Length: 340
Image (cartoon, rainbow, N blue to C red; front, side, top):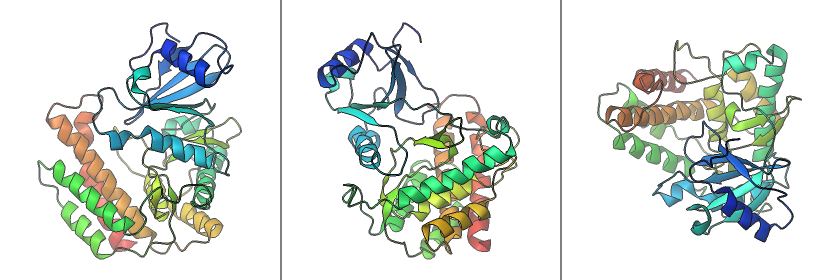
């Protein structure tokens, strides 16, 4: 690791805190590096040369405290660690902003690979890819089997009216980034509103459950589920709908959006739905709605990125092509809702 500390993390201050709060945990000077690829919160790997930990903190200069709630993330992994859901072992939460300039938490480092592209999965081969993705379903079933009350998460969210609130929230997000005509987006939003399904009993939901948010070990087992910043209590089928959406094959040449669904051995969406239904015992008859909602949500997110790009607020490889993808996601949402 570089001897120059990354922005947002002072290894000496962190070491002093750990020595005070967890004496004996660290055995030497700390070095740190920032992990690239995170969407919002910053993630660092820290080591003393023998052992490793991970630090999560809000973005530098953030203003929306509720969007980067370290206490909330730390709470959910602390609650889930004793269950069958693989999460990193929590070490501590620090809400004292004098240490790193923002609240943060520390958890154990878990070795594993977040597979982000079909090219990465190609190194596993078809059989191991299939096993890894089916394991993703099994782990989701385990998450949704956790009793929120027994885990101390009974007040972790407001499940009543969850789907209606989600739909309104993402509608507002769309309105906040409107600067062009998008054929079909209002039609999709309205159609989703007219067809709201009846939610099953609430569970802990991850909120962004997909292959690149888990770490897979050399034995192809899921070692840890990461990125809990969108987790809450709500409708478990929203997690499944998102997973199904990410498992659809998209023919998008030179797309800046990476998908794994085209990898050899990747199970088709129908198999994932059937496996989830069989293992969880939940009725997945309305899964078309949840999948269409996932297409809508991603269309809104991509339109937000495109909007910020047109204002010169976002730069990076591929951002100039994000806008072209939004109509594709809208079309998939409409088709999924109409045809099931």
